[in-house]
Image (cartoon, rainbow over the protein chains, first blue to last red):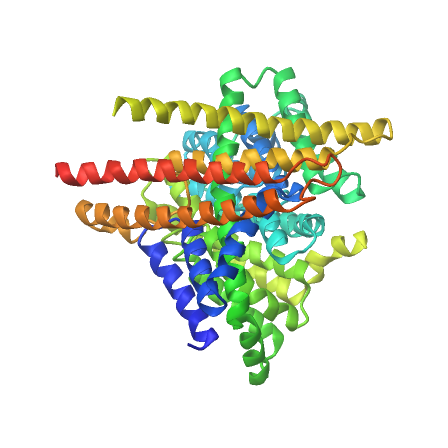
Length: 433
Length: 163
């Protein structure tokens, strides 16, 4: 059989197995192995299935992922979310829609120490939702702003998706992290502006809260001082070149433990739970990564990426249109499969094509993260929405999805902005060169 | 049955200890290395190697722990709409396929370990530690994953039989 047909059938089989409830990592391992054995031979496939996993698990650089997951877990169990929310609340609270804006602000700060979108949504959501209910915010806005704010967790560094993208495409993780900073800040501000405008137009949707004194603002800032300092050290060290990503993650984790213990925020039980949480997420992500890299071998020998690139070139489509089509494919896929599966399945196919069109891999990484963000809040799979519906149990799912629409529109506008002005993402990484 | 249950609990405890210690060693070694390099101009000898090897323990058993907790990424959108009985049949099918995948990983890992064990000079660069035992740690991790999968498969089978 033609390698391309074999490759297409392979991808179809993965989707089918996923629909049957097979873990995505296992589906990729099975299809990757079978496809490679069919197109090359069984001995070579067995060689891949032996060398790839050991190569991944013994690689120092890949330990960045468990360590950043550990940072987020420590701060989650230390209850940092409450202090961050109070800080943002004291600054934004008195404005119309202030609590929702504070939620976005708190999510953005927590995102700077967390590599996960779900961790961000849960940490801030458990505190912000009851507060917004107390101030009689509309359920749709209260829940949607957390689901959308949580997605900042994978755009603002450190980001799990950037790490995975960097590993799969062999792109500098430091540059990807740095590239996420400005888009993360701009997107947060766009969310905040949108909430402010809507709250001004419809004051009953999000009434203003109480004014706080300067002293209260300073006290709230002091409560989060260690987290802000840690963000500065970790990101600053990465940008200046003091640390590699793995070192930054380890220092972040160590700093998080020490500061949480000094503040007496972290109990022994909380510490144990944080470790187990990090271990659980590590296992989940690494099974997918092992599967993705085994599958990569099969995708490469199927020649799909090369054929797709030459097909697109033969059509003579302008590169921005091709990018637009790729974004549309991601948006559609994001409605049906979860983000990790989407990234791991599509990057090996799209990355060579995008690179062939002359786009910067760092910029494409930011675009991928942005469309992944959207996938996390669009129905029916939107993981963040499921998580938030678990916290706000009396809010129906359709209400949350209704509230999500303006946030998705803002994200789409931002993706278009980034396609038109790639330097938004590339400005800072270029300074590193 | 009690024996298997107790064995499962013991393996879980052992797995938690191994992964937790490996994660903490990873963190502390990297911090000490950065501190040594930055403050005293002398990084710890073979820190990168030690951390990489700790990673073998961490990840090998973390995947098993995630399986024990049934936390691997699964798309349930379609399945959750089906009747319970059909869901159980799909569960049997997927656990069986997962066992096949793990069997492949065990076999591939064993071949890799065997090759490292029989190849002269297959050691780490700085400490000159044999790499083969670490490859077999991965195999052990895969066997643990297989054990939990088998346990889950049996649970579903018993449930189906009861119905």
